[in-house]
Length: 352
Image 1 (cartoon, helix red, strand yellow):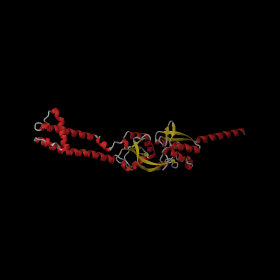
Image 2 (tube, rainbow, N blue to C red):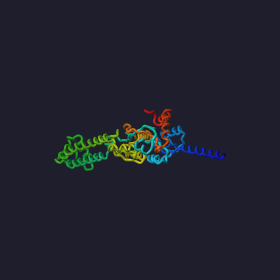
Image 3 (cartoon, helix red, strand yellow):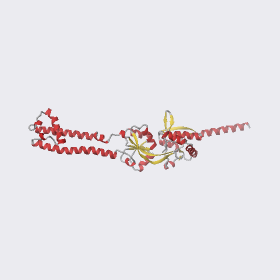
Image 4 (cartoon, one colour):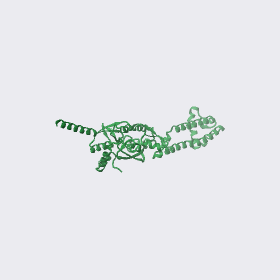
């Protein structure tokens, strides 16, 4: 009798231990501020706070495993090494075939991030500082100086203005040629020799061409910058240096729209390329880019256009996980009692 009672007590303790062990869940996540990241050694973010609220509601114990790549996080769910994954995980048809999802925990979409206006040089300044314009101005000055010195060679014995020594003649000769081009010359200093008169006519005619080239150059730079330098919508991405994360929903969208882009393995890599001005635009999840533009990138990044390709984030589970139904019920309760709205306001302010 005593042995039977002892065995029953041991069996009860074993069952309770197994149940307690079953409630200690392995959660995998990835660094994506403001949804999931580490600050001062503590796990934090919108998704992390929501996970804590769910755990309190469901009586869970859990441990968080933070991985480097988004694909590693989803892979842990697929192969069953993680009980669930939480971050900014888009619910897509392709992913639904490989794992289960909770009901949506966040409504998001894609958006475009571009360099802020403060980080760009104005069009006129860009035109004036272009190397081509400096070269053209240098050539113009060289032509004027050469033309003036030729005129000095032809006219120095016939025109009192040019009757100077060589070391004293270069600036008066240049000044004469400049005035000839800009003002039409000096009537009292009109060339007197046949060669001087021919050269004077050539300089005047050439000046019309030179001025036209300068004007066209500045106008073209400003026009091209106005046409190709601004990105306000998806249609403006064609022909630009666009970056996103490989195999993301943003990458799939750009591929469908036949927009060329550079794919990066992770968020840090694409943001580094953006900071180093290798990209004209970044296309990715709107809340992720908005958070970056408002914090680390506030001096050189800004959001443009509206949110497009609306999508929902969810919690990912291995296929057939018994946790899905409990989590969905708990999420409904958190929405009804105001806990979800409190967490949302903490990270994103009042919802529109």
